[in-house]
Image 1 (spheres, rainbow, N blue to C red):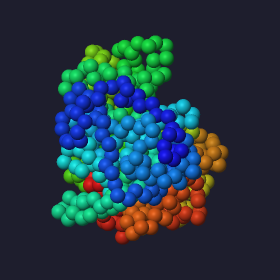
Image 2 (cartoon, rainbow, N blue to C red):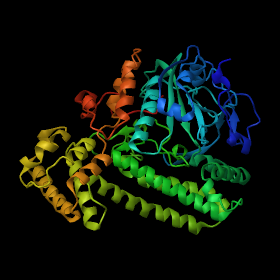
Image 3 (cartoon, one colour):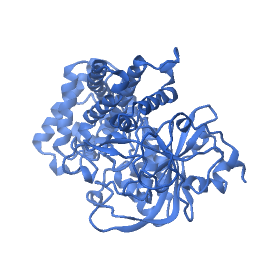
Image 4 (cartoon, one colour):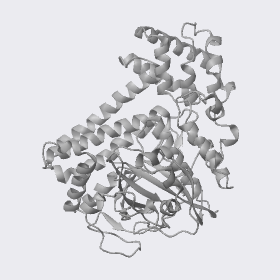
Length: 535
């Protein structure tokens, strides 16, 4: 036995505080009266860790020697356990694309255990793609390399962008092959199997509360809420051991506030989750479940990266705030039996819409280099800019980054004073008609006048803009290039992207090629624009 085996302390509060499924067998079924089912990961033939987040490993207490230990890949792929781990899959329901789907649960995610870090924090280690659970429905509980690469990299991208997210400790190959139909078009093929070890203080979702509420299992609903508050919102019960209606309302209010911050963060950097079902909404306000997500290349409020959502575009970029409010409404319905009063919940939902708009306006002011949002004139400026960005194919990330480079002392009615700086943001310069150029010139003049009102030092403005508008995001085509190499056994691009994404707001001239527009070849390539839920 290696030293790694018994090195860590696990305090598995979720399973200690909540009822378990009494059925030990691993077959797909409806599970009642239980928050989870004990389940062991599947054994795989040849586990191999191909990437780790070393900073996260250090935070969790893993040393370099631990990462090199022969036991580490076995644990990260599910073949072995550390002392104190007690694997389980959570039971929850949810709305999918606006429709109640009933019981869903962790169909291919298995929580290994709740690790106590060197600083005393509790972090759950979860394997995604570790095999069948009672909640796998029609699936096999496995994951493939392409989706696992995307989850691993995007977890790190979001963290360094400053947006709350689940994290990823490791990316492992299993040595198995998994059959998948990537575009649901009848062309199934074998792909390399993989597992991601995800890390968070909580993987609890809105759907965890929806299922017992739907089943009118108020005892389980209350136990789940109380556990969540005590484990993840302990500051709400500092002055009393009693969790009453007031605490539940304070909890819901904080969930709303965290969700505002999360979605505004997505909007700031051009991230589209792609599948904002209620079972994919984190109760602690983190980005969770990286499936068919995407990054805005050309600015389009109607963009969705999810092929399943192509027709109705429910989860498109521009509606993520509205969908978050809709999802919070479903959560409010679920916890109503604990509160038994609709008015305060309704008030908080209304406040969510107001708070989201306020936060969005402040975020846009930061993107444009204003000291703060001032009035409706600012809102008009924001909305007119987005309308302009939508008229021609404009790279959102590059546009805002280049905007900070303009010499705002110039006469912007002369296009030669701004077009050479912003030109790289346009995908097809032939779209820049005389009318468009004049409209953008007029907007820039208004922007220039607005900057004068702040009377700020230009260096401070530029520094703020560059700290708000990233130069590097995980464009879909970059992920796909890393996937293509990884499927050939070359993991260097994964490691290189880890380095690039670690400093998304820095210039990093040595990585300049990763800040370029989406190339033409990637416009229609599978994995570079639209993605399916297949993984």
